[in-house]
Length: 154
Image (cartoon, rainbow, N blue to C red):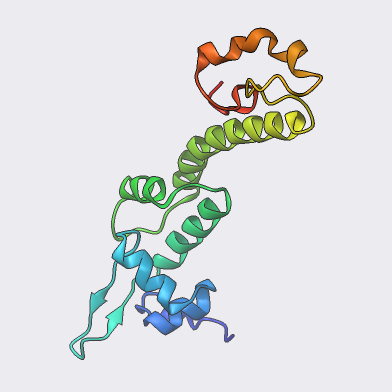
């Protein structure tokens, strides 16, 4: 990839240029645009053009997706950013702080699930030798149906 000419710093990008530079497929760029995560404008020749700040926005989207943040949550977060400006380090700090708390919670739930996989899951079957110790008389049924000990909401 060629080094950017300083004269091109304010040049808008075609969808192909955005795809090449961001590392996502053209179809993904169209999908992000259809979901309101990024925006383009049309040239006089009816070609999509993207402001250069879309590269940082796509980078934020990709990192958030790797964290397991739902697209709807990402869209809400991106709406808090001003249009026409590249997200700053402060913007990223604010967005990632909210996502970090959610990630910490999901890690705790997954850790609990992983650590409980070999034991009683609290289903109320009373067929495993451990069940009477972990869920005597199916007491967990008062909390609701299903595997109560591995319920992430518990």
